[in-house]
Length: 255
Image (cartoon, rainbow, N blue to C red; front, side, top):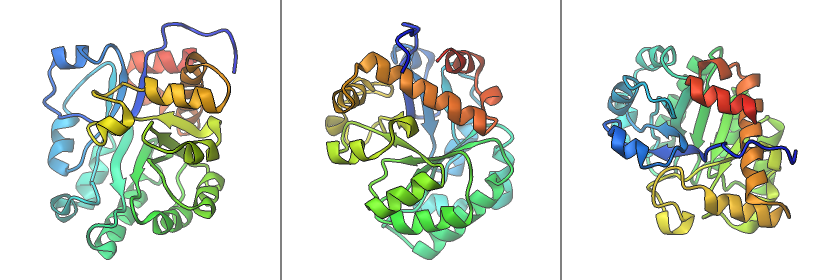
């Protein structure tokens, strides 16, 4: 990593949950952090995609552990949202609920994303192997596996697929050290596991920056720069860079 860094690169949080009715003072309280805000349901998505925030990217999501979201999923309506955002999330598989229904929804989402310049933030709790199998059949260059706890074999398969991994400070050192640093992005998954992640609000990624700095014998400042470099590489290869809010695109190019 280059020692010549821009001290002004903000904190980057690539997976957090924020209510679509968040106010400007509440966003200002995030201290300038750039946040990729995932949604759970079509209704949340509808409200979120009306926003025009300069430091936030809003996603189009169908959370696999929310039965109402799966039931409300409409493939054509979902596909139409991809003209309004460059982020799909949160989507994926979860050990709770019908595997058949979740797989059906996810495969339709991946089909809709096939030729779209988008990133995909994917949930996999309890069904990591099945998720990797689906992604092997339906690959996409914008895959980001959120809080991925798959087996070493599954992790290697995901790496070979070109996946990136969003990680947080609730994950063990063994798991964090097993990922290639050039494939990592930071997340808080706010408000989940706030004590374990050390993130009492979206954008608080200092704990994961510090953990990775220790693991890789470097500094948190260099880790932040590495995160932004990774985002630049991912958004360039997926043709997402030009679809980011202008301020976020500028920071990404500076990394």
